Image (cartoon, one colour):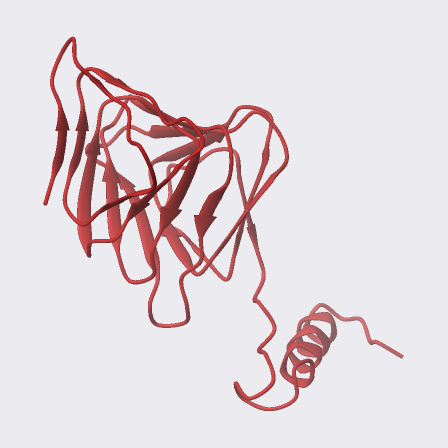
Length: 173
């Protein structure tokens, strides 16, 4: 199921919206206080849009049209998982823009390419892949495993940090 907003038309949802198909905004989208969730496995987002809250789900690919801007006025939720990444890409070999005026956007387990993150917010992608041609993103290290996911919640992270520090010629003594 796709959502298509024709030229000179306005779509103002009366609640949260889940879109399993493509999203095309040729007109006006009035987000109000609601959340838009892209829930498909491979979706295209066309047209510049302002969302209040935007949720991307694990295991999906979202392709934004190059040269467009998606503005988030509320919260961007983008948490994949190990082996179940969220992929953000652009439709051509030039970037699409994600914009948020302030705060911190924290995404986990992403694969990001041809994306400009801007607007004043800090954009962090933890345990994520920099596919290239990005700007404004901070690609950070691994998310430490939680209890029940590979042992003690900090031991693997401590070991990885020690190995990295030791490799660089330092010790943690």
